[in-house]
Length: 390
Image 1 (cartoon, rainbow, N blue to C red):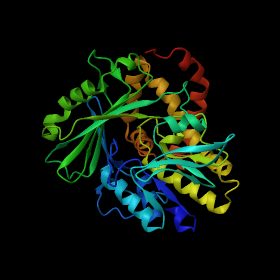
Image 2 (image 1 turned 60 degrees about the horizontal axis):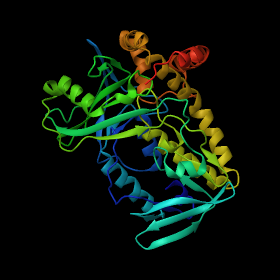
Image 3 (image 1 turned 180 degrees about the vertical axis):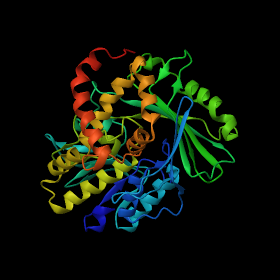
C-alpha cells in the first residue's frame, strides 16, 4: 500500500481468497503495532496486549511491554484471517489492484526479473514490472527460481497451533512457557504459547528449533498435546476448535535481492530465531522496499538490501548463533534460568522476545546485543562443530 499511495502501479497476487487463514501465533509485538500505525491500518478488530508472562520451570515473571520513543507500550493479538483481510483491504483502498486465487512465478531475462507469469481465474498472463516483491513466506518454488533459498548451514524452526475456547480469552498478557520436553523427556529449544484472542478463544501452540538432537523425529502434534496437558487446567481449555496446523519458520536466506526483485518478510529470512516471530519484520521490510522503489527504481534492490542488513543482520545473526547454544542440552537449562533469573535480565529477554532490539537500540539491551554478537561470534565455530545432530 505504501507504493500505491506513492503513485506506483501495484498488482498484488494472492494465492488464497479474501480473508484467507495463515498458520501463525497471531501475536503483534509493539514493533508490529508501530508498523501498522505507520501504514495507517487501525487495530480496531485486534485484542490489546499489555505485556508478556514468561515461565521457565517454577519461575514466572509478568512484564509489561516497555513504552519507548520508538514503539508503543502495547501489542495485540489478531487472528491472521482478520489481520490479512485488513491489510489487503487497505492495499486495495490505496489503489493497488488485488487478484485473489492467483499464483505467480518470476519471468527471468538472464538473472534479471522482468515481471511475473500469473495463473488465475482468467487464465495465464504475463505482467511486466520494474520491481517484483517476493512475499511468498517460507522459501519454495519462487525462491528457488531467484536464488533466495534458505542457508542450509543455518537453523530453522517448526511450529504448530490451534484454537480453543477459554474463559481467560480477554487477558491482556501473552504467555510463553520456555521449558518444553519431548516424549522422551528431552529439553526442547523452543517454547509453548498461549495468546488470548479476546473473542472467546486462545491461540495455543508450540515451536522448536532445528538445533536440537532428534529434531527430525520430533512430533509437533505430540508436543502440542503434551503442552496442552500442562496448561489445560489453568486455562480451562475446551476442545480444539480446528485441526492443529504446522508451518516452517525460515531464519536465513542466501539472497534477498537481485536485479529487478527483492524478498521481504519470511521470504527474506527475517524471522527472530529466539521467538519465531516475523510479522513486524514483514511489515517493515515491505514498507522499506516500497520507499526505496519510489525513491529510485534502478537502485532499489541494492539499497533495500543494505538498509535491511544495517537494521537487522546483527540481531538475527546473534539469534541464530544463540539457537546453536540452546541446542546443547547442557546449556539450555542454565540459559533459560538466566533469561528470567532477575528482573533486569528478564527485561532484556522481554525486549528480545518482542523484537524490540535491533542495530539502533540504545541502553542496556543494545549493549548486551553488541556484546553477545561479539562473544557468540567467537564461540560460533565450536558450537557448530559440536552441535546436536538429528
